[in-house]
Image 1 (cartoon, rainbow, N blue to C red):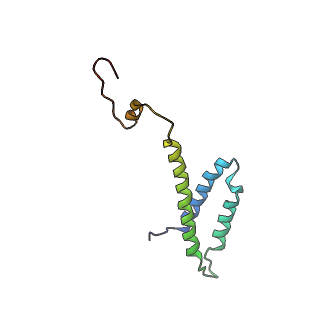
Image 2: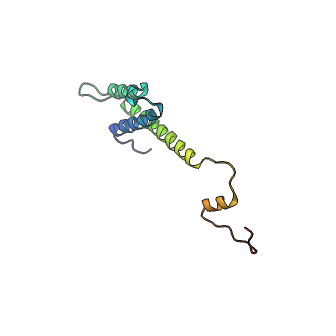
Image 3: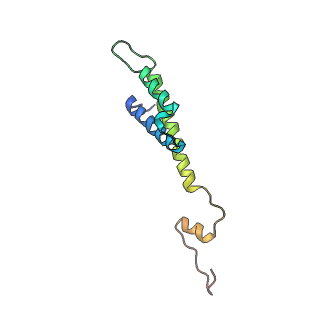
Amino acid sequence: MAALGSPLRTLRGLLRELRHAGGRAGRPYREMPAYQYVLAAFRAHRVTSEKLCRAQQELHFQAATYLCLLRSVREHAALHQEYHGKGERSPEEVAGLVGFTLPQQPGGKG
């Protein structure tokens, strides 16, 4: 299994993805319940000098998994938006998309 990295980096990544998701909702991302929940969970599971939090690694793993999900959903939506089919295309247009040109027929056809 790959290293998880810093919990702070994971938290910042989660908040960045929530900011992207909040931009579509039309309201500030800091008012989203998900934003408040993530901050509360990270604050509740931090390690202090008085206690050792056994669930910190579990929380960090779950947060990293959720970050991967949010990132993947956003990237999938962007790819879908860019490459989604736009209906029937002509053979010339399809050839142009992949970098080819259709051969010219003698006699001025094509």
